[in-house]
Image (cartoon, rainbow, N blue to C red; front, side, top):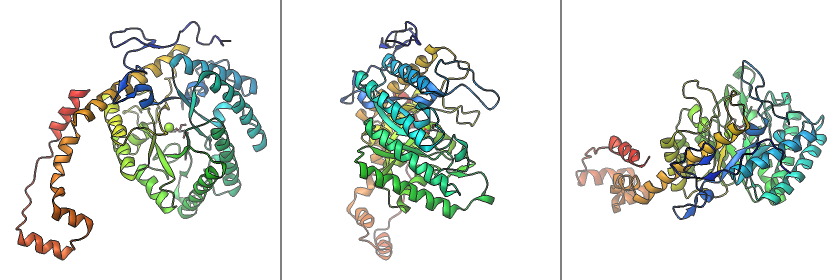
Length: 436
Ligand code: 3MF
Ligand code: MG
């Protein structure tokens, strides 16, 4: 039985680029084949439970603007929220969703009560997934909202908090496994510091390393087959967050012997906050072999805050998917909209329209990326730029067969005189613009 929340809105359909219907896709056509695969299977869209069903519309200057019938901390309200959520996934045709424990269950007074509440909702989700075919892209624990986490979870100076957080992650990994989740995400919301004056980096980073090892050990213990992902972010809410960006996370994984166990969930807005582009972070993760999944939401470039808006810039999406596809595309990962409405967008249909626009924008980006790859538009000039490295002498240098003094003799004997060549940046930028 329908909750009636979305009125008489029907399932969102693909109507093609000429459609002016705001409740239709103009570019996202799930069954259309792009680069040998259905678009739905390439993009693997997921709806974020927290922004779409839980966020009340507050900002630093004012509270709730959204009035939702399930905004109440009870099990009954949590089930109504779940009913609406699965109706939404169906209307939108979203194959996946993502959630934190705190998004889906009422907050208990104790750890045991939290676990009971979570498990009751997981039972409910299990039935709904079976009835609808919607799947879980990733589960996670909210280890940053409750006041107990104000000084961090794994990195807290109080070991009681470390233990409570570890116990909570155990329950969330259990839940994710039961629901067949493809990944489990750790975003270190408050794993950082407000001031160095009260912070011992050595202890905190060691604690964080131990915590992550515990998670990986437990994954094997229960036979969870998904990928463990860390989501980098440089700051906000803390002044400095330890999982600053992809490169920092990779160094942390190596230090803790986890570089083959854990991958990254890269968020567009977090990449920008770190002073990078989204494609920089995706390409870097490919280079290290730790690319996992993406959170597809932008920030407002003027405000400098993590505003979590739906993507609307096709050239940016094209370059992002160019690197996703160049790395072989998603395996367990997908495109999660960690995006929320603006607080004046009050109507139920705004929730659909935000996602529709985001999905269309990603679809256009994907198609442009696939075409660029097909044509070798960027790869051919890139290979040519590095082409001299294919010569046998330069291969020997790379393999370490020529030592520094061998190289010196070789350069002298052959009178090697480097001739600078154009980097052709404007040409390449113009090439990209042909595709978007
Ligand atoms: C914050 C985020 C987070 C993470 C989520 C899962 C609340 O900037 O992006 O959203 O995506 O916690 O790790
Ligand atoms: Mg995110």
